[in-house]
Amino acid sequence: MIYMVLVFSDNRNLNIELLSKGSELAKELGEKLTTIIIGKSDEELANEYIAFGAEEVYIAENEIEFFKSEEFSDIIEKIINETNNNYILIGSNKNGKELASRLAGKIDAGCIIDCSNIYFKDKKITAERTVYSGNAISIEQFNSLPAILTVSSKVFDPLKKDEKNKGNIVKKKYDIEKSSSKIINVKEMQSESVNVEDAEIIVSCGRGFKNKEDIKYANELADTLKGKTIGCSRPIAADLKWLSEDHWIGLSGHKVKPKLYIAAGISGQIQHIAGMRDSGIIVAINKDPEALIFKSADYGIVGDLYEVLPKLATALKNKIS
Amino acid sequence: MNIIVCAKDVVDASEMKIDSNTNKPILEGISKKISDIDKNAIEEAIKIKEKHGGKITAITVGTPDSKERIKELLAMGADEGVLIPYPEKYDYHIVSKLLAEAIKKINEYDIIICGEASTDFFSGQIGPKIAGLLNISQITYAFNLNVEKDKIIGERNMGENSVTTESSYPVLVTVTKEINEPRLPSLMEILGAANKPIHEWNADSLLNDTNTKIETIDIKGISMERKNIVFKDNIDDSVTKLVDSLSKDGVLG
Ligand SMILES: Cc1cc2nc3c(=O)[nH]c(=O)nc-3n(C[C@H](O)[C@H](O)[C@H](O)COP(=O)(O)OP(=O)(O)OC[C@H]3O[C@@H](n4cnc5c(N)ncnc54)[C@H](O)[C@@H]3O)c2cc1C
Ligand SMILES: Nc1ncnc2c1ncn2[C@@H]1O[C@H](COP(=O)(O)O)[C@@H](O)[C@H]1O
Image (cartoon, rainbow over all chains, first blue to last red; front, top):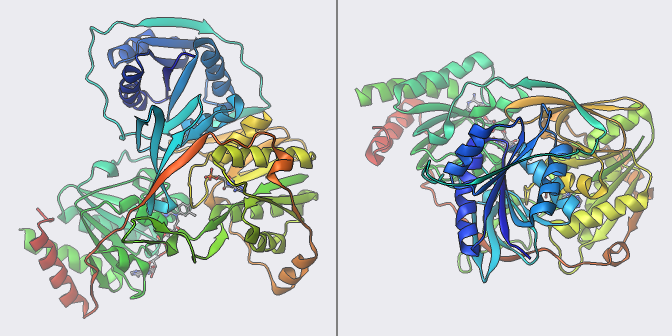
C-alpha cells in the first residue's frame, strides 16, 4: 500500500491552507502530496498550488459549470483509485462537507468532519473536533484506511509561497457518471464582505431587535468603538435576512474571538455561544433577567436594548474622547 | 410518496456540565431529545404526505429508551418507527451503514430526509454518506422544497450561493432549521401514537461487518469561566458601571 496524501477544495485559499497540513503529513510518511483541480484547465492555478507545496496536481478537465457532489465525488474516487492516495484532506466549506461524506460512502471509508487539528499518534492518523455544541473536544483516530478528513478555513496557516518548487501536472479527462439531479439556478447570496473572524470588537444583534431598521442602534454603538464590526444570531441572518450571512456567529456560522463581544437581544442558546465563547470580554444586554446569556457573560445589563444601546454609545463616546 | 426520515436521539447539550476532576463532560442524567433539525425533517415529511399521500417511516439508531422519542415522531405524524439499538462499538460509518441497510430493507422509498446536522456531533456527515452508500442523488441544506409527482426541487443554502437543484426519485434530502416550524402534537395525537408500530431491528441482522473505522480515544470538556457580573439598577447607573469596568479591563482602546 502507498500512503500518499491528497488535498482538495474548490476554494483556492482553503486549498492552499490544506496543502500546508498535507505537506507536513506527507513528509512524515515520506510520501508525495497531490492536489486536484476540477473544471477548466487552469495551469496558472496548478503552478500556484505547486509553489504552495503540492508535488503533483491533477487537472480533471471537464465542462462542469457548477459544483455537484455526485460528479465531484465520482472524479475524486477515480483519481484515488488511480493514485492510491490513502489520506484525503477536503476543505470544509458546505460543498466540501457533503462531498467528503458522499465520497466516504462510495469508497467505504471513515470520515471526520471539521477537524480542528490533525496529527499522527501511534502511527495512526488522529483528529480533534468540537462536539456537544462546543462543550467538548473529541479526539478520534482512524483504525483503517483510506481516511477522509475535512478542515475549515483558518485552521491551518498556508506555507510560504516558493516559486522554485518543482511539481508535476497531470491533465486528464474523466467520464462522469450521470446523476439524476441537476442544478437549475445559482444565485449569489447577498454579502457585505464583513470579516467577523478578524474583528477586535463585535456588537452582535439577536431577535430582541424588532425591525431591520433598528440594527442602526447597534451600528451607532459600534461606530464609537475601534475595530468594530456587527455580528448577529442565526435567525437574524437565516430567517429574517436582516443582515447577510457573513455576520452570522455560532455553531453553524462564524467562530469569532474578539477582545470585546457585546450581545444585544440575544438569548444565549448554546449554539450561539459555540461561536463566541473564545471572546475576551463578553457583555450581554437583555431585558429578561433570567436570560441564559448572562451565564456566559462577564458583564450584563438587564434592560431594554432600545434604551441601553443609545446610552451606552453616548457614555463610551465620552469615555474614549 | 414513501418517505423515510432519519432522526437522532441526542442528549441535550445545553444541560451538559463538565466534571471538574476528570475534565470530561458528564453525560449521565441529562435529558434526551430528538435532535432539533430532525424535527424539521419530520415536519417536512408530514407536509409532503399531506399533499401527495404515502407513508412516513422514522428510523433511529439509538439506545433502548430512544423508543420514547420515536413515539414523539409518531405523534407528530410518522406512520411507523424503526429502532436500531447501537451495537457495542459504533462510529459515523457504522451508523450510516445501519441506516442505509435499514433503508434497503424498507425497500420502497422516494425521499429520505435527514437534518443538515445533529446537535451533538454536528458533522452533517450521515445524510450525504447514506446517499453515497445507496448511490442516489442528494439535495443538501434545503431551506425550501417543492415536491411534484415525478421530481423534487430544492432551494439550498450553500453559504456563498443559494443553489436550486432538481432531482427525480429516489433522492436524499438534508434540511435546514429554516425550512419550517415543527408542529407540537395534540393530546389526541399523542394518545393515537400508542397504536402505531415501532419495529426493532438488530444491528447484527443488518450488517455482517460491524468493525468501526474510527475510534474516539479521548474526550475533553471545555468549561467557560466568566465573571457573571450583572447590573440590574437603573439603566444610567448600569451603563456607567459597565463603561468603567470595560475601561479597567482595557478592552476599549
Ligand atoms: C443545529 C443548530 C445550529 C444552530 N446554529 C446557530 C448559530 O450558528 N448561531 C446562532 O445564533 N444560533 C444558532 N442556532 C439557533 C439557536 O439555537 C437559537 O435559536 C438562536 O441563537 C436564537 O437567536 P436569538 O438569541 O437572536 O433569538 P431568541 O432566542 O428569540 O432571543 C431573543 C432575546 O432577546 C431578548 N429581548 C427581546 N426584546 C428585547 C429588548 N427590547 N431588549 C433587550 N432584550 C430583548 C429576549 O429576552 C431574548 O432573550 C442553531 C440551532 C441549531 C438547532
Ligand atoms: N443515530 C442516528 N439515527 C438516525 N439518524 C441519524 C443518526 N445520526 C445522524 N442521523 C441523521 O443524520 C443527520 C446528520 O447527523 P450528523 O452527521 O451526526 O450531523 C441527522 O440530522 C439525522 O437526520
